Image 1 (tube, one colour):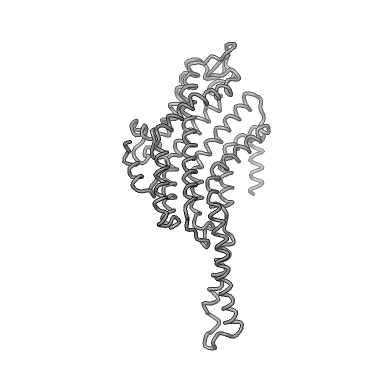
Image 2 (cartoon, one colour):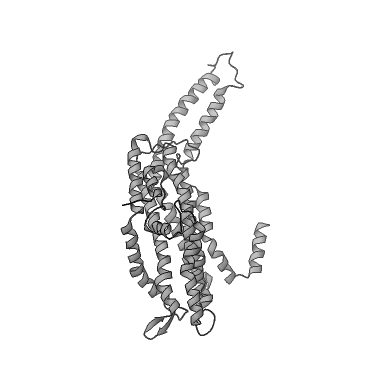
Length: 399
């Protein structure tokens, strides 16, 4: 198989691996001039691809008279789910490619730069990276995703969506008849979005698989590392890299709920379980792959406490014998002695080990992730609380 210049570079330098710089879709980007090597022209892709999905819907709905209120229960202009899907969520998913590309490459390189992967395990580490790149570049995998989108997901979408007359379909008993906009929506716009989302979940699987395989190596963790994760704290940055992908999911769900509220008479409190559930699910999806390093971190903490406990015991015994039991010579002053500072440093090191986390991320990471993911649901509060009252409550809390 032939490789582009960027793919060859990744194969030649494992530490320069990119999770998204490869595969059939990436090659299509290059050939259609929607990208240059290195995922340049991000703004062009972020605008062009959503327009391919959304603009024909607007034009066809206008031609058919289904764009604005009239005889159709849900006109195109009032379909909040469609606008959230293609004008907000899809641009986020496209823009996320460059963000993940730029942020994950240095993160992967940290395994080698920090010596976490020792020289004896370097060959296996390179093999793991090569395996991930082969999966990323798989033509068969992306073709199978397309087939899955046009079969399983298409049937599921039709069964869940066609329940009320709308701008893209009307009921002609006993079936539904698609409008011209509906044909584009059903066979271009929806499959395009589903494929992009599915492709991201495959990329997340590749990332999870890579982390799991690396966790099987004999890693060199330092229990006194100040990140309180044995040196693996840099992996917490990967969460921020994937944030736009997760945000796109809740933007879409927010649009779906908005449609239910405005067009089907729903109320926001009725969807609180779904909102909480999707937020928890997305947090688990993005954080769970990092937990594969828990056995290494727990073992490093256990051995660190044992080894530094022995060292600390020996040091304090000698310190006690020297400065408390009179072992120090009269010519050696207590004030200014480095022994006291060394004792404090040793105590600090021991506290660092005791504070080691079993996962390479902290509570702050989880809180930030939850807040960002839940942010698209905030505008829905206006359906139950007037804007003036909401602003007043916020000012009361802040001031």
